Length: 154
Image (cartoon, rainbow, N blue to C red):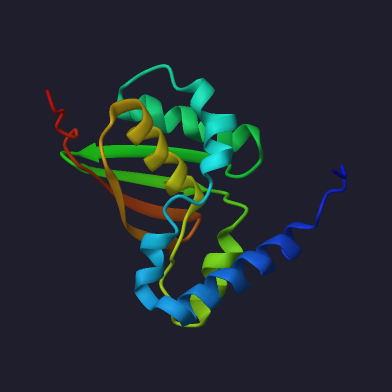
C-alpha cells in the first residue's frame, strides 16, 4: 500500500458522487443504508478510547478521535431524554453536505454521527438512529435518538 496522500477535494468529490448516486437510486431510503459507514475506522480508532458508559463521555471520546485525526475540529453534545443533540464543527466533509444541499438533497450520511451511534451501541447496547443532520453556519447540528437498552433473553 502506498503512503501517498490524496487531496481532500478529490476524496470529497468521490464521496459526493457516491452519495448522489445512492440518492438517485434509493431516495431518502439511502440514509438507512449508510448508518454503518465508518465501522472499520470506529473499531480501529474510537473503540480503544471508550472508557466510560456516560453518553457525554462517549461523544467526547469520539470527538477527541475525530479531532486527533483531523476529521472534525470540535464535537459537543447535549441530551434531553432520548434525544442526543450533537454539534460538529470543522468537519472535513462539510463540502459534501453543501453540494448535496445545492441539489436540493437533505444530508444522507454523517461520519461523526455514525461513529457516535456505533460507540453508543457498542458501549451501552442501545440502538441509535440518526434523525437529522442540519448543516449550519460554523458546523452541523445532528439529532440522534438513543433508544432504551435491548432486552436480554434469559
